[in-house]
Image (cartoon, rainbow, N blue to C red; front, side, top):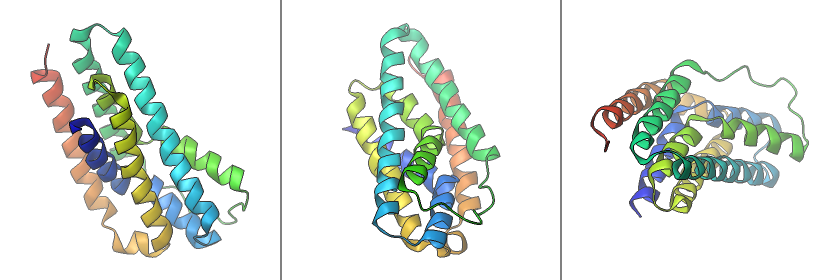
Length: 184
């Protein structure tokens, strides 16, 4: 259950600080926050979290036990770099109304999101990766859904830059602590 809580909290913070929620808010502003975008948000969160947890568990099963904390710390540091460097792009001028296109873009972006990297690192170390997948799904999905409902207000009301700085520092500290003091 600890892995579920860690995944829920960390993916929530990473998604709040990341660019995926801004993308969803902008899409919602252009398209409306209807049921299609709602389903696309949750499908993207499920896909990103599920694939990340699967990849982490797969790697964790194949790596030597003593290497897992070091590899997981590198993944957390990569998530910090992604959060620090990757910013939301321009708002789409004419967003497509195709559910398939929207769901695909959101799923692919969620797959490469810092929240998915965090889920991958946690799943490498967890005994049961499905707890990590479910925590990541709920964390990322809830934030994407909130961004969908807030639309343009998301960027004006959410202190994304401040949250990004806090998340980057937290991930750097976690990654370094795991590399230096984790079980070896």
